Length: 246
Ligand SMILES: [Zn+2]
Image (cartoon, rainbow, N blue to C red; front, side):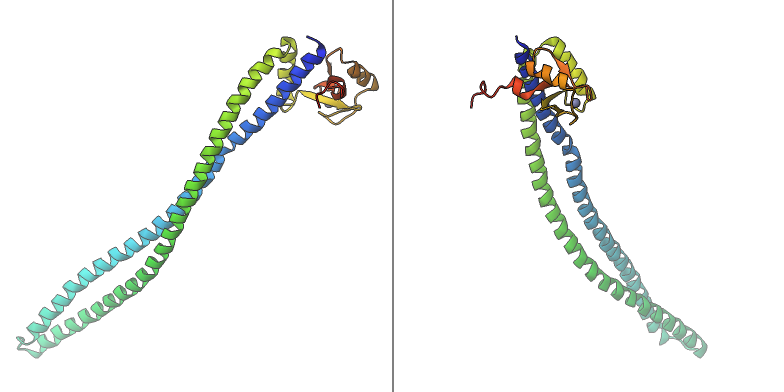
């Protein structure tokens, strides 16, 4: 295998690895995107639950007061019935006073029930809004999660296809060169091979020495960039315009 062919195989491998990196990167953002959707839904659910709890507490308190009020009113009725049987003015005055106190207290409790009932109307209105927001959030989340699932399935498929292509491409790369490639790729943010255009390395955008540029034109040895240490090749030497199928 000529050096040109070896470098071409490496270039192909680099291309596949870049695509793989891109798809894997996108796939890696999915859990966070899913968590965001789940978080939005949980917030809407909490908004509804909190309002529901407030309304429930209001209703409990109202029922409790109403039940006590019923008993107190019965008591007052009994006392009022007893007034007619009382013979001494002193006892009459005493019971009358008790009745007045109990009635005032009952009025206060009755006002409290009205206040709670008015608050319940407001709470029920807010609860209805929260229920609407929750069902909207549920629908939106359902759609978004379905989209994310679809995206994940598509990316997993792409990865499987790219990995198969990579295995084939790696077979064509000289083992020594492959090891060098993997090593540089790890240290250079996934890009181990760079073209040189004119005298500029496209990996680090710095110029290489003229002598090196000339040797790249001949394409008969594997060279690395003195600045970024990536494997470099001359794009025109590797793919001469005449040889490329138009
Ligand atoms: Zn470089």
